[in-house]
Image (tube, rainbow, N blue to C red):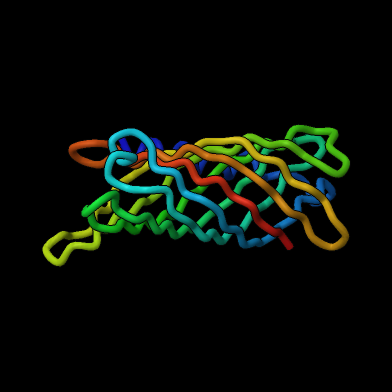
Length: 175
């Protein structure tokens, strides 16, 4: 099942990015940070923490507003009470749909799948590697020579016995 989803995402991303050169897609990179809010059962174990994110994207065009973005994110969350601290690494491939017509602010939808590594700060605990999904909303603000963005996403890591869920609230800069 994971291979089918991965292959489908790869095909959609490849076909959506294959356009003539005059379409003027832009490749950008950026950095971001913000708060990571654990929810669900994971919210009972961990407190709100922080995250840092690196991103590489290929934007959509006026005729095809669908782009692609790869994110690598580090999350650090403190355990509640006497519970241990948590570290969550993610690498996601995302499709980004930018709504056309934005001059200085461009709203977008983002969603994708990827690899999630969860590590608990206990001496006998092993880290967990799992598949996960994410989706959210954001806005990009064009400035002189660079852009900024804000976004909120929901991340769902398929883990046993309970799913790990977080909502990162992010502010970033893109070059």
